[in-house]
Image (cartoon, rainbow, N blue to C red):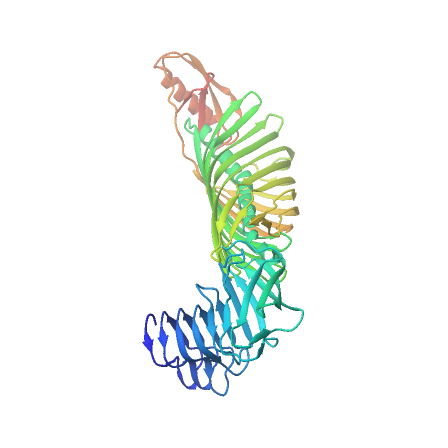
Length: 584
């Protein structure tokens, strides 16, 4: 009700008149305001703003009247009355002092300073105008709250909470009384409550600092960094394997140059951060890859697009829970060089944007940051027998998530530092199967995170910092297969389990699609043709011919027929000229 002039206001009648709400703004009430009237009148709420009440304000009137709440902001009230237990009076700073004749039946008084100035010019929050003698508040629980958007308090800052302006009146509270207070949801204060020389009740800051629950706000950044690392692992493992396969197929089938690969993986991991973050999500990669023969061996390279989306739940040791979503989208380049000695080196560069949000601690926020990442790995393949290979590798990974600022719904502004992840992985993998038509593989690895610290400040005060630092063990199992030898679609199924700093499992399903670009030979040049068997990359030394005129089309056709008759592999053949061109 706004800007109204009324007699009396009652929120509800009945044997049970509980859970009623009354809201009056800029109103004048000539009678009383009652939240609920009946036998049982619990949990009623009365909110008055810039309102004058000639009578009494009562949360609940009845036999059982518990947990009723009355909120005043810049109001004038004759008196308040209540019985029962757990009844609360909340007084807000507002635009002027709230005046009450007297108060009774109240067990809790909450003072909300909102954005009250800290330079000593703030007005008194509550004035008692008809409380004769000494008003003793020692049996009342006091609490203080401020908006998170206000300037933080320092030791020694004071506010006048209560005064008794009744002729000859005063206010007392007892000795060594303290009250706890907060700014927003994450900065805590301890106030000493005492009567000053003027007989007023004054709150003085004796202790100030960030609370432990502020760590929950920063867990989001640690979780987002870990999720970016999941995307890097996907690209370095299944993504690179897919790029190699499709690049090789493109290079050997119909004179192709580029192959297209696509894959998706998902899973659930718990990251120990001093507390922990449960992360669930999926990663998607799509890229183009090309294979080139170089002096050292075979080089596979190409661009890719990546996307990931997930959700998380974070938990502190005291049970504080935060949750939200995180996502990223980016682009990059990957490459792998395989030497003739069966050793290899690979790497990737990634850049993009990541977005995260948070809900918890009665607040929320969202951030967007730029990220860039890279990894380099080296390894060697050992052929133990026909169709069986053991690989050993070492991989170093780095990821940087830029800093960001977030404005919390509770008023605070948090400045999040950049998160830098430095990981080292040492592992081995056993693969059974001669070709990707059907391959089983299993791997073991150990990984250590040297960084991953997430930090944040608010008005110069540091929040507790979670960290991804620590070691984890990895066990993976997988199966690669293609429906048939000449299929342009193949699959890679992978399941990975983690234990240590990270624990949980990931599953990946990779679908690889070959898209070929054909280069046509020019009959006006001289050169030599050679044939390679699809899927192996080995030269067929028996197949060789020369060309010098348009009649070479017949010679090449005969060559292809000859190669197919001699080949042991049921795949298409690529004929390349010595100068690097290709023909069908």
